[in-house]
Length: 275
Image (cartoon, rainbow, N blue to C red; front, side, top):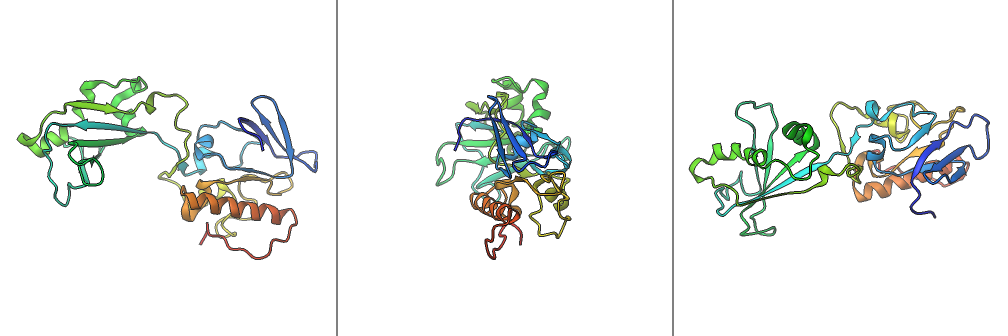
């Protein structure tokens, strides 16, 4: 087992029909050879093309992988008074949309001043996704300290809703993840809009028992249509994507399929990742 070995390139085409036709090259120029390779890196690594594949993946990340890792900006607003109410639609979350453009960025305000969280804190938490805070803060959002006027302007929907009850925040705190260039390759991805199960299995592999795609009509097959590169991990388990047990099941079914392809008799087994 090797640690601190960043993979730079995976070659799996096997043009010379070698027994150990898969090659893994690390950043420090170590070369490893194998008959098969299982990759369990975060989907964010594929999103950002941090590993070069030779040949290139038949179905690329941008067009076929729905599992995208995104950064989140969390802004904490602390107030002197709790001007919102503990009623059915405000106990845990308050949802707002801009009055001038109902189709614009919606706001999800989490009430932290509840029993079991931070009772008595008078804090609301606003969470924005990468696309949303880029739209709001523009090209300069990478700076560590965000513009205070813009941070306060985000409260306008609450000003409109609560009127005279609203009070200005006494403190505003936000995380700094957005300013870190290499942060966000991440452990957790979510299914982005515009993708189908066909796209999913084309990218991740033939884990669908041939229901959606044909044999080797997916990433990871060499020139002889032999599945030798297995993209696995928590994002690959469709029924439980991006959960701890999804990662476990994903690794389990990948290992079984790989051993079976190498001629090992592993008996009957189910596929909890595909029901």
